[in-house]
Length: 182
Image (cartoon, rainbow, N blue to C red):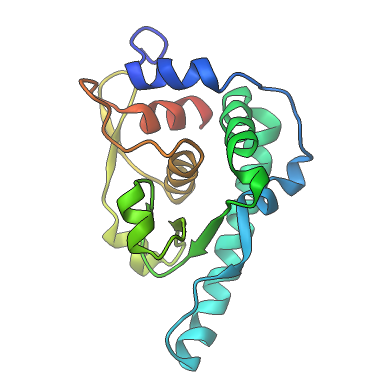
């Protein structure tokens, strides 16, 4: 179904994101994508509580991106295009653990964050339990996001800067790419 009925937005993005070569060492992909600094917490207590959560998210995103870059030509195409068009100029993302799962993809969202592009991820079960989003499988059925899938979904948002819903397409481009990569 993914290949039988691709969304127009995916077809369009596929025409510009064409390089599936392993252009970067997979262990460096995360550092090419994210700034090392983080979104600061309000208080010292919050900082201590969030440090472990931040490190776990950072490790998860690093291993997930390295594995996807090694194993998925589609992920490499999306990453290489994002790197060539803006990441190479230092226009990287900031990791936040303060929200369950979200990504600033529109100009308005980035402006509201004072110019910062933020990817919000969590592996805190308390936050994850609140996240009950579903995605459409290729066969038309729906399934709940896992933490790994939710991470990849937000990474795809960041790499493509595409919104969730595709025009006139039931799954949307980000879900299509996530289905292909995962």
